[in-house]
Length: 119
Image 1 (cartoon, rainbow, N blue to C red):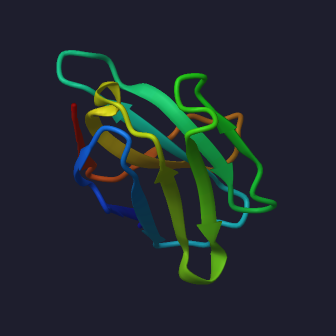
Image 2 (image 1 turned 180 degrees about the vertical axis):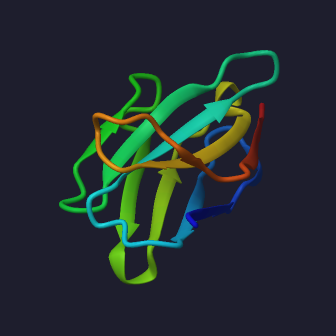
Image 3 (image 1 turned 90 degrees about the horizontal axis):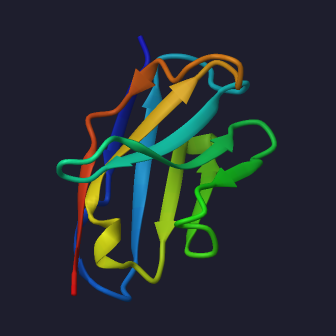
């Protein structure tokens, strides 16, 4: 059974940084794509970034490009989201997700971690 556990959220001032982690367990993820999503109060969940376990290629939403960086540590089965130059608009619950390949939907989700950016 796939388990995804996020950590690293918190309260930070605008302009600050946080690093989120997503520890994955339950199977071999070598061909999986991992995703980061977020949901702000009263808004739909939105895409933030993706990273492939194999090769590490990444994609980003325009709103976070050049500020956020996704990475992975294969030995620890953990993916990260480094968030710099945080803005109040980045305040949301951040979720980690996984899918078997880019043609499938994200079937596995973590419980989420709260990120709050104060102005």
